Image (tube, rainbow, N blue to C red):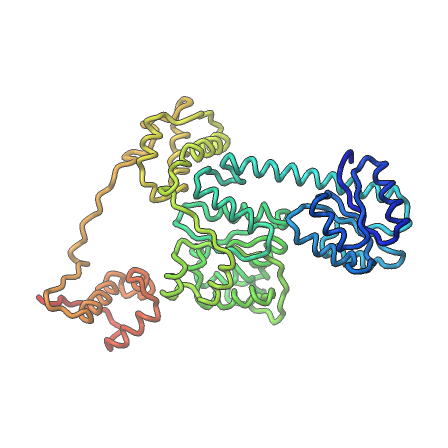
Length: 464
């Protein structure tokens, strides 16, 4: 505890001076305050690592001081002193954020032990913070890599939101690392010791998604042979990532919204509600505003999830991070496959820099994994890359059977009708798929077909 700063807050003068003398003998730098107001003033310039405070004081008591200290950017541990028989107050202080408590007039050895533990934890957290900031400055935060301006902004946002309980909506193209961001938020949060559960809403059949998320009771539906706990309950106390939230059925979105607001869920087939304590993160590769406008995402759910937004940049917009990404991915692939590939050649790096990377970091990962597997030595050469890597594949011509031909004089309404009907024909009358291709909601498609007076697929050429 040598030279660690401790602030003693006590309105009884004799008690205050006695504690200060004792703590000073143990090797700490000590300051004192008569109440919470004076303590806050001294915290500003003294910046203590530990605050030892009485609970019952005039002007500002210890409980209010504890709340105020918790709001300060300064990281310090608060130990509360309680009079005999006021253990309930001490427990309440622990819930607010006190490190520990001790009864006044007790054995000084216990205070010294608690101080040692507080100092040790404070030092550990301070070292971790320094390490984390150092790594961030070098372009590393958890599994994320990049020293570009775009990635540094992402790191800053993650660092700000991770300690909170706010919902986060992570947006960006497929393969940009949205799940890595979610995992990093979890690992930097107070929930890091609890489960992190990720579920891809696009990969689960619509008939099963509610069971996957909320769980079900035995006999809730055909094939429900036993009770099953859903993702919410699996993530209890931790973090749940709902990936591709825009692919979740609208009906399920309404039930999810209620769980987020009430913090209670009901398994399929159950009459009993279960309380859940889960931080929900969501991710989508759709543009949120467009997803809402097109009916893929409920507006009220969007606002509930979008408390904090993190937009992941595509790799083509921060290619200056390529060398760092390549080095990190090579290390990962070497460990995964038991190889010793050290670097990529200059010619390979030139190809990487010129590539558009439509698949983003996921495409880079897959490319390097293949190269590491086939590489005979310690350097990845162009011959180790996938055949045709970097070549632009020409877009195939539109096939004649699905072509929409319009003559001069075709009205906008006629053109719209023809496009809708031809798209339905191309999808074998699959209205959900047709709506996706057309970029409209399923409801809008049904309204259009009702307007045309038909639900059948028809074909026609206008102006021929």
